[in-house]
Length: 470
Image 1 (cartoon, one colour):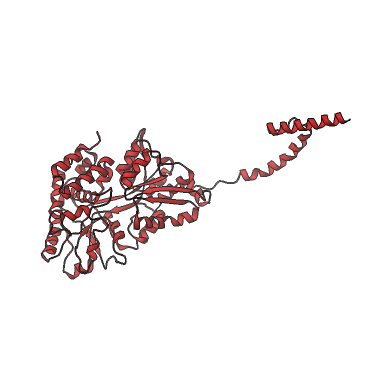
Image 2 (image 1 turned 120 degrees about the vertical axis):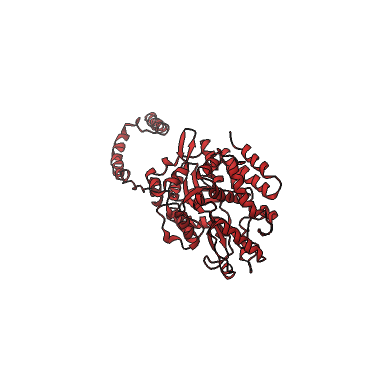
């Protein structure tokens, strides 16, 4: 009897061990009914599996899923050049999306962005999304196969609907296996404008110039009145010199053809060409005249671009004219009101045959890590809603077709948008389109050296030409 009991117990132990090791109760015949009784439980869970999927939004499925809360608690990292006031405006502009979806967009801005981002990408430390103010810099990453083709992430039909063809064309870049949609445009800037202190300007009896000759006459008049006409500064950390390149681009559009401008961007028209040297003549007539520039020529390379317009708001103004993109209002003293404390005019044309061109720029967002929450964020950035808060705060223009002019509470950005709309031609910032080694490298560096007087014009232009990738 005891032996039988021990045999039964032994069988039970072995059975238990088999169940544990194999994950199946098959060896024990008496457990079959239990398995059978569990079937209805599985059946009752079937309706959950067949729950209707969330309907996709025009931008893509992931954005719809994000608004349904599917990615709550996730983090999407971003890197770019926004710092100080611009960084605050960016963070504020995405708060509503973060609250609606639970996705945390962590933006890391750096004044050394141009120097650091290539190192991060090449080192395998890519942020999820990168904001490039220089498409040429993004183009370099695309050629290396580092960026994700956004036509596989965002509905291409939506992109065609919400962007003009020119923006789509500028976001299409050549990858290792052919052209891809390398990025989408999130913010635009108009650059062909000159700010001035309106109340004092009007009180002095000055008038807005219509031609370049008028502009030079105004410059001479202000100087003759004992004041300094221009506020100019090009210091910007590792990006020092970009403000000088903007002047060259604006004047190139006014002194040569669009075909030549496009050739210049591609490296087919040399820097040390008559066309570029002619543009420099117009610029140096202002920049290298100490009577025309606040602090004189020597101060230009060491004056932070964001501080350059500040003397314009002194009482009385210590300089009167500042050519810069509409974003510069973010650096104006707090409390200054557009239309009252300051206004601006279109940088006048030079040669009538080239009409009234406008130089512009913008921020192109590229994606480097493919996760659902990252897809949702980049899809969101393809909508005007993503920059609505920034537009309302001032300092941004939307390239999205679904944005609304009523969002422009700041008359500056509305007026810039109108200037862009009424332009005879529009071209993107050349240095931003050139290969990164040139546009965000030697072009900045040698123009800074030229302004500082450490290198002659021909030597500076030859150095830039020599740096063009073979």
